[in-house]
Structures are given as C-alpha cells and as structure tokens.
Length: 442
Image (cartoon, rainbow, N blue to C red; front, side, top):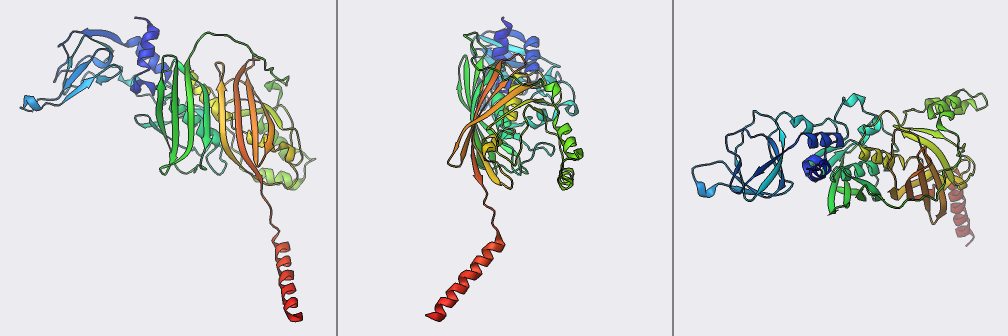
C-alpha cells in the first residue's frame, strides 16, 4: 500500500491528528495491515489482541461483556477511522469485536503506545526544557474532542491583556491539530471580540466546517469564563503543483547579521552619554524580558516625532523549532502581530502623545513553506487611517527573496485626552463665581 495513502488515512483519525507530525510518520511506518471476513472475531473478550486497531475499510461490531443475559449485551458499530485496542501487551480486552463485512484494519503493534503520548503536540523527542519559548507558548493541552486549553506564560510578552498574536497562534494551533498533517494552513481570518485576561486559561473550541480531498476548513472560538473573546476561521490545503509568480519585490535592506539586536539597542540606551540621565534611569528601571521572537530593525524610528507609516525588520524564533510545518506557520501567525499596530500611528506621533489601541481583525495568507527559526524580513506599511481605525498591511520574505506571507490587519487607534485637573477646577470656580455675581446683580 502507498505510504502516502497510509499517512493520509492516519491523518484523518482524530486521536492521531493531535500528535506531532513526526510521531504520525513513525506510526505510519509501524502499522500492519490485517484483513478479516464477515463474522470473524477481530479480538475476543479476555484476550490481549495485537495492539491498537484502526479501521481502514469495512465495519465491525463491539459486543459488550457477558452478564448472563445474551439478549442485553450492549453493542456498538465501528466504521472507517474508528479505533480500538491497547498499546501494551498486558491489557486484556473486555469486549468482543466482530467483523460485519469484509474488514481491513491497520494495527499498531504492542509496545508502541508511547508514540500516542508525546510530551508536546509539536515535539515527540527531547525534553520540555529544551523546547523554545514560543513553542511552549503555542503548546495546547487537549482536554476533549476538538477542545484545547492554552495559557499565557509568565515569560511571554505582556501587554496588560492577552497579546493578539498569542490568540492567533494558539487558535491556529488548535485548528491545525484537527486536520491531517499533509494539509497546511493557507489562510486565516481572525476577529478580536473582547480583551483577554492574562490570568485566565483560554479554551479553544474547534468546529470542523469542512473536510475535502484537497482542502479543509476550521472555525475556532476562544473562550474565557464561558465568553467567546476571539474567533478565527482557517483554511488548509494539501500541497499541490501549480502556476507560480511573484510581483512583490523584497526591499533592499541590510542583512540581519549586520544589525543590532534589541538587547544591544537597550544597552546603547543605557550607556549613551548623549541621552538625558533621567531617561537612562527610566530605561534601567523598566523590567526587560527578551521576547520569544528575535528582532533586528532595519530602520530607525522615534515615538516623539512623525515618521513614514512603514517599518521593516528581520525576525526569527529564538531557539530551534521542531520540523512540524504547522508549528512554523503558527509561529509566523504569532509574530505577525508584534509591533504591527504602531505603524498606523507613525505619521501622528508627537511628544506627549498618548493613545489607546485595540485589535479589530487580522488576516494572513501563507504562500510558501516557511521556516520560522531562520531569518525572515517583515515589511509593514499603513496605507490609510481614518475614523479612529488604522489599516496595516505586511509582507514576509525569506532570505531567498521569496514572499512567504501576506498580512492585513485593522486596528482601533484613538488619542487619549489628558485632563489637566488644575485648569478644570479653576474654570469651575470662575463659572460658579460668575453665576453668583449674576444672581447678586439680578
């Protein structure tokens, strides 16, 4: 049997969709085909069987344990993609499984059950302490069929509320773990409904909108305290050969190796004698936690004066990521929202300006295979801002000058009016005096 067909079949089994792609590939190498005729016992009550059975073709009937009344023994029908059995040889079956038609099963032999219990949904090897921070952030805990739980880690970027990129990355991770590993996300559209609470877990409920031969669609709702705070729709596609062109040109920028890191930029702000001492003390007092994404800016910018509504920087995940392509796309989704919102404010910056920003929606189109732990160039522009909303768009390029992703996003951007209470109180006193004098002269 064609190995790709086996991988594609196993990828449709919900139990296996949650696994790292490397684990599923190993399962595909180890499974054995077993055929049964109508009426054959696949496993018998009281026997150990041969391992874990996945129904490839046909139907089988589960007959419960005998309790002395043959007419009341519970029955269950098993169809394609259903599974039964045990991963260890010492486990004894409590039921009979009988073929109702010509039946074909893929059997994962005893002793390989550990493949179904990886330490991470992304990584089947190594120990969690060796995983990168962003991989920890995007790790989800499967708690039920198509339901996952995510958390905001103490070392992850904190913006007084759940970071928008975390919602996008974790929701895409949940959706990815309900499709077969041969299909990868090619687009997503997200809506931010309510600000997320950093101190609460996030429950991701995946709805299987469609499963086709080449495409699959998933809708994900993120909930806190039972309230939907974020919603995402994602489409997945099996790799196919087709027409290819690229009109978007990669900007000419310095190579990342020649640019300072954020840590080096901070050190310069601390030690540069040209900067006011009070400013340097303020920088020193600020808690500095390195982001899980390493960034090298190509352009200089200032938060105190207007600038072009654009930004370009190189970025990559800190540490080594596993080879799961779904993880790399989730990392790009996570990183796509970093520093994105501020670009629409660039032409309006001035000293003392205070603003409030809220994410409204976010869209990504993935066009090529990506490697998020290698340098990628992010070119961001804001074509328009109006009515308290800023529109921002971006392209990501790999080092081979190929465009990998296109990103669109809309933000609510409003200036916070600063109230001078001294002036307000003086105005109120003068107003009251005016009313008093008017009453006297009347």
